[in-house]
Length: 128
Image 1: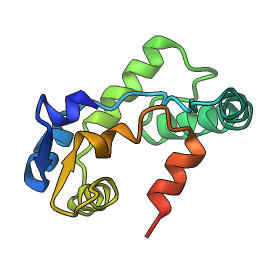
Image 2: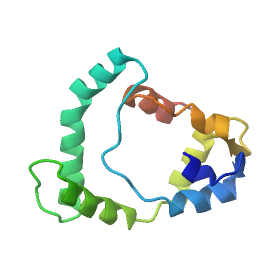
Image 3: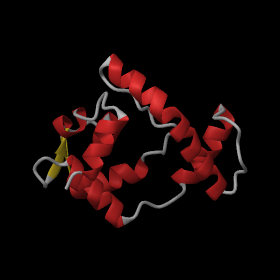
Image 4: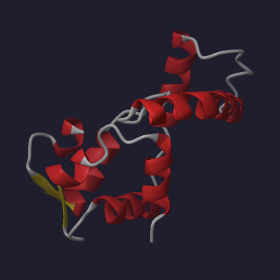
């Protein structure tokens, strides 16, 4: 997440919007947890769902129906998704979730994402 803060200890909402739009999309998301139990649970339950979601995204982008996640197909999909514009509402919602004080995003706000498994991340995104 150092790429998001770009060396600063905190960034404003406007800086966040600029920085997040500069980041490239990376697939697949890494659904790893900090504890082995979470890692195993995440891999067993989410890998098939991740492949299914990836295939659906590839289909929506008219990239065919790939059988599995190989490097060249992942790269094509990454580029296609990266070309999409983030909506203002999506950026605002993400800022609200990440910012602990509502005014800025600090390194501490970002560090809580480190090692978070899919379930914890999903809970974070669905929190009010």
